[in-house]
Amino acid sequence: MEAFTVTTPLWRWQSATAPAAWYFLTIEGEAADGIRLAAMGGQWLDRRRGFGSAKVRAVIGDTSWNTSVFPHRDSGGWLLPVKAAVRKAEELAESDMVTVTVSL
Image 1 (cartoon, helix red, strand yellow):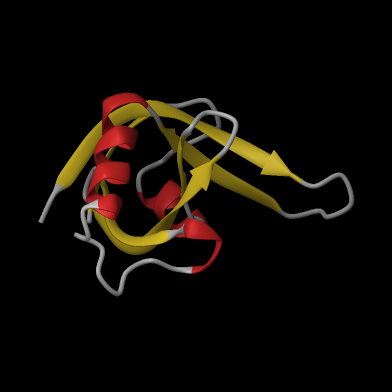
Image 2: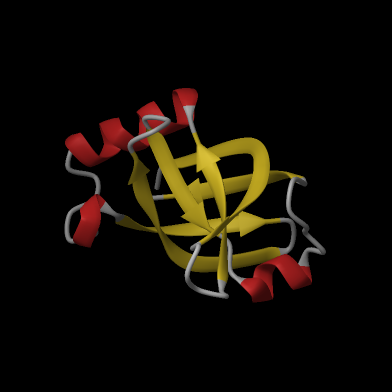
C-alpha cells in the first residue's frame, strides 16, 4: 500500500446559496504526482470513482477514516474532504496547518 504525507492548511468552501460548508485539504506537489502515478499505474484497480475520485484511507493525528480524494483543476492536485467528526476529534479549525497521510 502506497502512502503520501503532506502538511497543508484546512480551508472551507461554502456555496453562495446553501448554508452548509465543506472543509478540505489540498494535496499538491510530489504527493499529488505520486497519487496520479499510482492511478495511472493501475494501483487503484476497482478504486476509481465518479468525478475522477479515488477511495483512500486518511489519517490525521489519532483519527483515521475511509474517504475519497478528488482531482482539483485549479491546483493540479487533489482535494481531501475533512468531515466534522474528524475536525472535532482532532480539534481542527479553518486555516490550521494539518498533517495528513493518505493511503491508496
